[in-house]
Image (tube, rainbow, N blue to C red; front, side, top):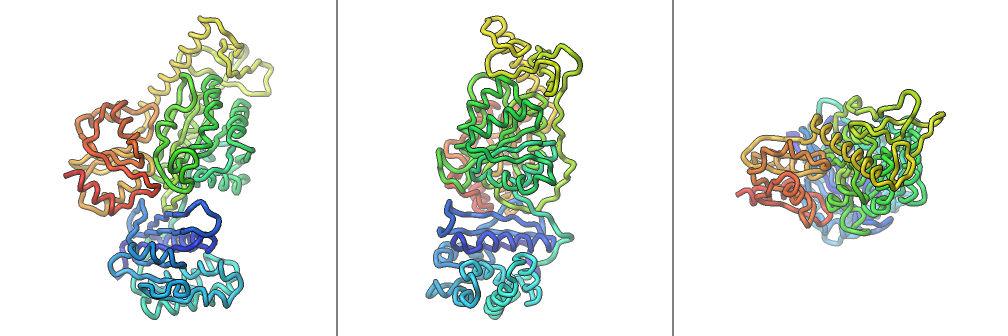
Length: 552
């Protein structure tokens, strides 16, 4: 009988090919036509430490990993000790008997076998794919095809090594968890890849970033595909350089985005204020990590919400939104770039490590992306800051015979600096009308997602949405899930009906920043809340039990 849902955890030291062992399994499941969710857990180390990948696959849509695994493969002693409590009832544990003396499960001398081949430290990760092949009932030939597809290099050593591991596991647990195929091969994507493709689809010309986990892979992806996507990708020397180059790029007419995490975004704040005064269209992608300062660089949290809502000093229009799923990240990234250019204002795409780096299968309509097309000046007598009724001045870019004056100083309509009281008030009024124009435009858009229906009401946002939806799928809880996508301006007009709902608010914040935002902006007081702030995303089955507890 085939398995509806199956979870595989593989763990070991950094440098042993743990991520590859997990991603190869995820790719294989997707090739079978199954839905997949992959979560990588790793410390900020190049070598050593404890790394693991949790891959959950199902025959229906899935939006989270699970931590009760049907197969756990531990390549070192720490992994075996850490994950032996994560084995589901009836699950299989495969461990490296060379480093674990009396383990629970199936012991295989992985290190001894690896020593027979070149680069044994790197080869040991192939044990994960071999053990998985045996447990899900692949034949030896199918296992070899799996290895060939995923590892490609050094097959003359990888295949015989994998075959020895496969045989040892198959002897005791071969075919224990056969998996049924889906209807078609499925694509997989991380949140950062979806964001990169979304901004490219909206017409992005330039992407600038200084590497900072967990936003770094946007830079990597766009740099690797710069020719296909037509995006100039650059890594300046610091986040301060990133944002200032970006402002110059946008002022010259190039659709430009930057990406970073909390510490880097803090360095960009002064230039965000410049963008507010100069009315420069810029999209900043802020992928949050855990804790202030350096925090816990490779883990997830939603502690940057308040920070993201009001970057920079002074009063000017800001647009902030957060995607709830990898699929939504694609369309929202494009939409925010379009809004930044429509309103010549800074826009912030706020996300977290959990969405940025997790991979999942998805159906993506590449046409589901806005195109960033600003209102352009036509004719003579150009005024960069023309005092328009909606607060949005037409744009003009070089080359031109007209004066195009961008400035960080208060100014008149031409962009000439001024300290005249009436002129100062006039430009303040102009920028305030723009803020109101943004608000009115958002009223015409979809700014809130709703899922399900039930007596209980759950509010959440960002990547936590994925965990909440999966928790409801694996429980008998009947609830309406409300996910505000736009966080500034906050869509209070969409939320008025929930003022007496006493919702459960679920977020990854110790201080309850999202809960306080709901109370402040929409006058929605939580009946209960569930918070997690240890750097790990919510696990669906654990979360379901918490929802049931607080809902009573």
